[in-house]
Length: 183
Image (cartoon, rainbow, N blue to C red; front, side):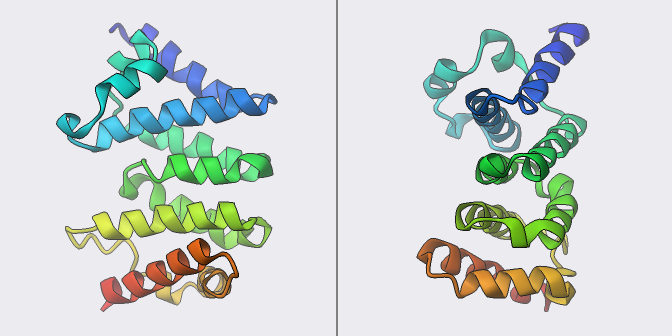
């Protein structure tokens, strides 16, 4: 695929994230999550027919680079800041971004805006952190700062006491894994 066409396809998906139309924004996040998953997981484990149903031919031809993932993560984080009704979906999609690209900005957004998250957004934010901690098999130390970040830790502690069982369990798992990784 020629660079100009490739950029046009990716830029259109990112532009759809800024759409005032909820459905357009949500579908763009879903498509980007599929593309990110393809970029970060071995292809044989994917259900290609599922992707064929939701990605255009040009989208299927995209191979996301590290830089593309950083660009997508930045757009998804803007969705978190701008569209409260799409926060959960944005974190759901961010969980598919490579951890070394997304971890620092996600931790920052949670620390700055975590008090504005509803339970569903907080759950998906924890889910992303949990996923990255689980995948941190190389011991990259991505989460060394987590136990020392008071604002972030206060949100995780509050979420761990939530009446939403999924949120409480995922927040507890993040804190437990982060403590284990920082030792």
